[in-house]
Length: 514
Image 1: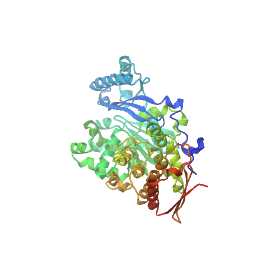
Image 2: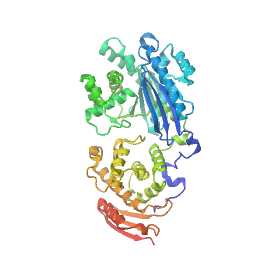
Image 3: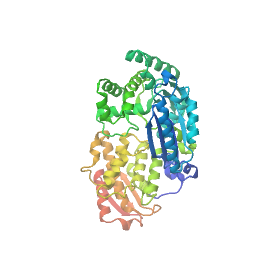
Image 4: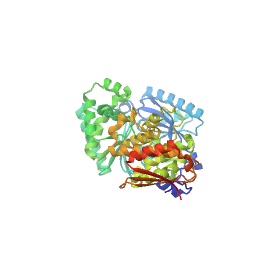
């Protein structure tokens, strides 16, 4: 590939042309959803690229609607007052943002309570927001769709724990299969008689029934829900894990057992403060840990991944046409960021084709990260020059991006850091070094230096830059520059090309295209 930016769909490869400019996608540019749960009422407003939206607004109010429903059959009276006030606030916020009518769903507490339907009617009467009380299977389906928002085409078992229920859903090749609900929510487990022994027996019996219904599920286990996220925070704290992004955080069964033991033996207040967990949430975590241990012992998944995406993201996914769902969330987000923030939107694609010959033997999975880096290479230009490298690294490792594993975040961050800094002295990536193999660190450095050089040939996105030819066995890097780019090849460009050659251990040659 010679670096020319084509205009056909095929030129984008498996990633496809960006769809956020499509009129059908623009309808999804700002969507507000409300989740009325057993513990909290949350408003999320999504904004940005349709396939990988940003969180324009996100607010949670702890209401404890489900507290006491098992014993009384009715919603917590104080919870009703707080939840109604929350809905009034959210409706006012939505009006101020100019949103379409809010999409609101209620889950276990309101479907179990005798006065759930009556409270939904009160909310609609007082705020004009219709709250849909969904059953457990529908809750499981929407949560699974939320997972698919971040992991298109994924497979495994989605386990969504709320305050009053726990749902399981099977996903396979991007489709939701069998799903089931249970009363294994911490609020209900807290009220069981028989203490810890009685609770353990009840959990074992109910998880066994879930296993009978779902059948073998030994693939990946996706954990959705606030109690799982709190448990993951504690696991990060126990392991002194450097990256605090919870989405795509991985745990092993051994990790969960060790963290559950820590929860069982630690001073919960001290642990809560150390991990930044709310008191209301921390109260439920020990019960959730008991459930998770039994789920792991029963289903024996080969992999455990945290998903920050759940029912609210599933509601957004529900509104997407299939061609948007099929998009790569990472690439869509990066294309949107480039279009919004880069000095020359579209040059990222040209840069990608320019550097790709250096990585011709790489896998498709790695190629998409290289593509993402090229799209993001110029979006932080407004930062002070002394801090651009660090800001690029921070953005990559902490941004709300789907379809990106933790080590891939660090790889992306290191590549973008080298885009702006030739040497990593004092760079923040040293904290994350253990998340990357030595080979990946080196490849990210090469990518960053290739982008750093390519940026020197900055021109119209449709202008031909030239072409690299890389012979890894002979360690020879050849560059043919187009007549348009030849005048741009000055001393600084030569120095950056030499730095790339040094990173590759290569002999470098440059010539004008014939």
